[in-house]
Image 1 (cartoon, helix red, strand yellow):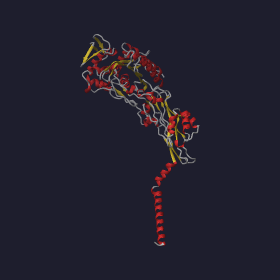
Image 2 (tube, rainbow, N blue to C red):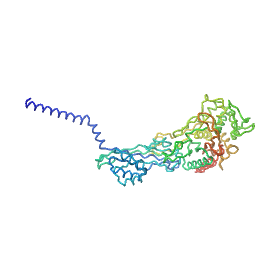
Image 3 (cartoon, helix red, strand yellow):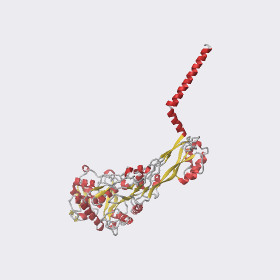
Image 4 (tube, rainbow, N blue to C red):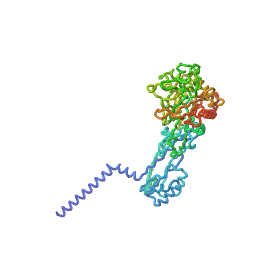
Length: 570
């Protein structure tokens, strides 16, 4: 090949190379420009989340029950730290914990590791002053419950991702949580997260903080309920207990508690049993408190009046069961009123038989048994009311006085509120208000229920007659220890056997003692339901539960300044 030919070939090869480079440049600068630009931006910019402050939860009088305070999240860049042992020691001294656990993170081959979240601001500031290389800080918020275990089962708690995990914190999470913001800024030449360079490109989207909410809970009543419930459980050597205190007209829950209590500030150290709000989530056989509903049903249907007289033998056989009284007696003639005031099982069975299977079932479902109350709280149980096709021949004999059916204390409270409130049953609830962010913003616009309907269950006349019967339970019957000086009280005792799992009968010697009632009877403003689980020192509801009802009722009406006639004086 001659020299000219070789020169021509080399020229062609050069041209082809330049053509290839040109095509590549056009490809990169046009077709792939957006992709490479995005990669370059991502390498240069860092996106840092700006957390939203979670809304405050207040009690009905404006006392904070859950707040968010400023905190810091601490992280490290292990690949920037040379003195790993010294840094681990400093972290342990400042933040607490084991030095080895920090050293384990520092020895990882990475550019980012979380060390501690939601660190107290003062403690984080002291650590930041040390100027440790490779240790960084992010602004954050820490959830704090100022009153410790007060209403812990109601409030629930928040996880490390700032989301509600239980209780009100979970149910109203979308209202309380807010929306985090973001900040984009250029990294420094060493690529350190959060170390923006002067005059670097910066963009910011501000967080939208969470909404505050006001609960119907009264901090003082809640405290008294927990204090006295714990004392009663201890006094009677009981397995546990629960209390519901509410307004029977509106369904507002003033206090609700069950043992054991827990502190949401330290929820990781508690148990599932303590976290569960058993007055809402656990059902039990109500026993004789159910007689209130059975009596209301027969009166409302016009079958009997409070003065109707019944011949009551010492026992009565229904199906394959012989039903006894709690205390043996001879045959008697008792009015319907006396059947309730003396808590007669035999008499109540006669009332149930008069209603019939369908009539009794319709009456109890009307009072909301077998369904959830609809309270604004997660994990509510609906109890158990078998449909008529599941009843045995003896069911009509035991269901009227509270066996073979189960309710939660809250369900029973709602049902009896239907009697207290002149025949209209309220919907229990915790939310009192969501304060407006501006003149037009309302709780309804936040996407939550703000209206709580009433359901007619019996006539006003029936309700007044049953209330009169229940006042005689206090003055002449089994509930004398439930009296509140200066007030007319209406209520009913209950003593129920503890059912074995899967309907296998009843546990020997185990009972639930209970009392439910309301006051002032003329114009009820407060309803209190007390259940004491498996007490060892006495077990009748009139003995273990009625005194607690009396004490808590007295405290509540005095605290709310409710006069004996029912008028609110504050």
